[in-house]
Each structure stands twice: as C-alpha cells, then as structure tokens.
Length: 151
Figure (tube, one colour):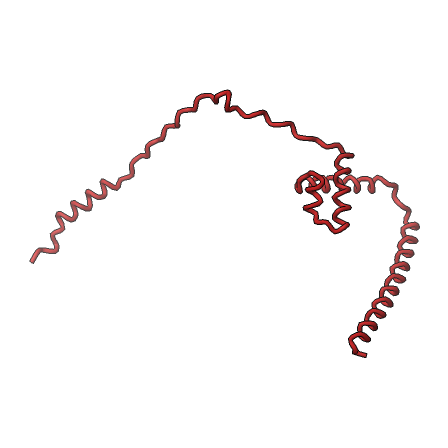
C-alpha cells in the first residue's frame, strides 16, 4: 500500500493552481474609432419649433372637451377631437386652476358679521333641502314597496 502521509505531488499541484489563479490586471479596452462625419444626404431635418398656444386658444380647446364629456362622450375621444394630447389637456387644465384661486384671494375680505349671516342662511337652506330630499326618498320607497307587494 501507498503511504498516505506522502503528499508530495499533491502539494505541488495545489501550489501550481494557486499561482495560476492569482488575479491578473484587466486589459483596458480601447475606444472604437469615431465614425466619419455624417453624410449630407443622411442629415435629419431640423426639429420644428414647438407650437405655443395663447390663453384664449387653450380655453377655446378646453371648453369643447368639457362640454363633450358632460354630454356623455369619453374624455379620450373628446381630447382627440380637440386635436391635443392627454398630457397637454391635463397640463393646461392644471395650469388654469391656480389662476382662479389667485383671483379669489385678491377679492376684499368679507366682514365677520356678513359671513355669519351667510352661514346662518346657508344652514337654513341646507335644512330645507334635506327635508325635501327625505320626503322624496320616502315617496319613492313607498312606491317601490307597493310595486313589490311588500306592504
């Protein structure tokens, strides 16, 4: 039998593998050569200057979209018929809202007594409307019960 304590050739192979596995510096790649200047026939036409709409034109395109949507048309179809993109529509719509808020802030402040009187008036109107709605719903409910034969 062979002597198992003799590791001479194995130890030499392990040492040789360690030398082979030693990290080597990576080669640096050179950049590819620059292409020659583009040929005149392949040059792209200059980009068209973006269209700028005035506030009147924007409102002129937004109003028909709102009316079409209120008539039951889908928002996407209404925007397409106006000739603008959805992103443009939302951008214009968002830009139009803060203008209205600025106008509301520029109005004169209302005296506290007028605010209180308006609040009381609104509360009374609210109560009347709630009562009217409750009566209407009770009537509809009674009619449905009659139709279904639940009474």
